[in-house]
Image (spheres, rainbow, N blue to C red):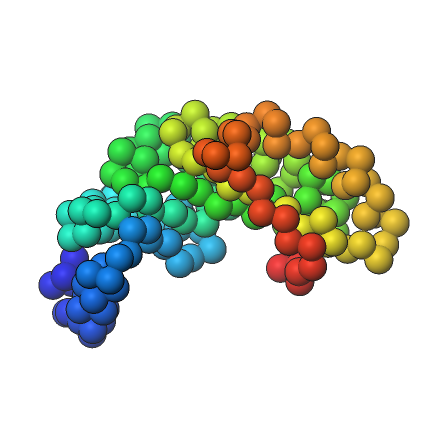
Length: 173
């Protein structure tokens, strides 16, 4: 990976990461809206290289879209977990199909549940992002208030294993 980064003109990244590591870095966050879309072989290579170069890393986290997680095979997901990916952050945003459609999320409540369950079965810690204030100016906001208490229990661990992040105000994507 180091030589590939240097050949690609990003050679500065390795020394910067090394300096960060020497000063106590223990977790890595793969900065992409959906790293699981990357070819599994390439992502596995990145994960293994990170673990090899920085053996003290305790956790590697990535964003994942529910749709991508739901369509990945269990074999691929488990191989990514074994390669060193520990936690997935998923933007559920809402447990209401009406609100999800209104914001163009491209996923349903059922798809989010399926994806979360599949991620847990593959061995990942799952953290879901909910936006209770999403679209609160419309009548559609009344629906999530009734749905949230029942969503998440299907796949969420106890709070010491993973958690929901509530984002009271946010811009829809």
